[in-house]
Image 1: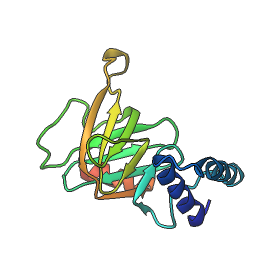
Image 2: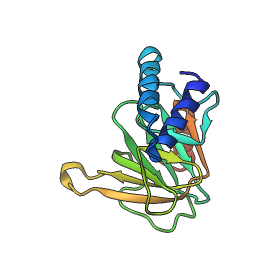
Image 3: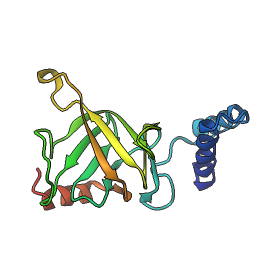
Image 4: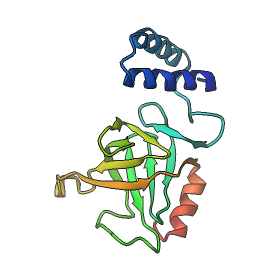
Amino acid sequence: MGIEAWWRQAEVDARAAANDPQDRAEVASVLRDLAATGPPAVAHDTRTMERLDLRIERGIFVIRSESDTVYLVDIRSLPRVMRLTGPRTHSRGWWDDQWAPLVKVFSSPDGETTEAGIIRVGRRATYVADPGGMADPNEHWWASRVVSSIEQLTDEELSELLAERGVQ
């Protein structure tokens, strides 16, 4: 799927949020395009993006904000997340700096309206994970600061970032 189809999908999402009656035909058209071409590796021609839709994207992504803490989202197969702390991270949890199964993610422009499965630059993202598995069946969540960038990483870049932060 090329950039034009991606933008068309973004328009569909915007109309769906506004309950536009033209949405059904457009959704059908986009779904036909996706069925014919398959999902894109990234939303556009570079590895940085304004919007990460976990329902269609595949890869490893770093989500940054003004904080030293970054979030790593791995959606190559079963979704997982890591809250990767930095030297100036103030609040820490026992599940930091390790991969945890990602249960859901959503972004919110105003703290009330949410977009399930989507992370957007300019909005806070909330990650819900299950880091304890059967030993701790409770889900845990993290709310990030306002997202400033989303970038797809290669395996090598991921390894370098983890080593830089002292995580194995």
